[in-house]
Image 1: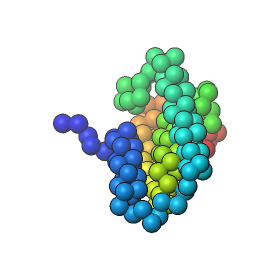
Image 2 (image 1 turned 45 degrees about the horizontal axis):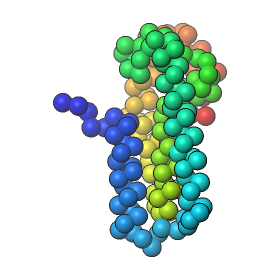
Image 3 (image 1 turned 45 degrees about the vertical axis):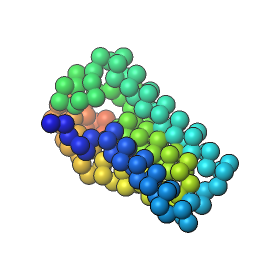
Length: 147
């Protein structure tokens, strides 16, 4: 059985929540056209960041699954953040929350980041330390977790 709480699934939950907020709490739909269209640019930039990280995984012939990771990537977007995929997902959700026009939806990206940090990042950092040892600890000293 597949896990229901993987980060892409959390993105879907956030987007569904935004749609429900838009439909059922219309009094808080306060980001009016054309200002809400900024959300498209924000979402696109998050998507691009995720794509850059994915390209580096492919270039180094490694995987998103840390248990099967074969290379510690430290260049490109990984030189600015240890978690460019999660940062990209956060930016993507932020863009959709702006696009949704609902003020409450603006809290969903932060909720996503908190959940991912608590559920996934801590575990992944432990696995990275176990896999790459001192090399990862040095990387951790020079590159921030988020931005």
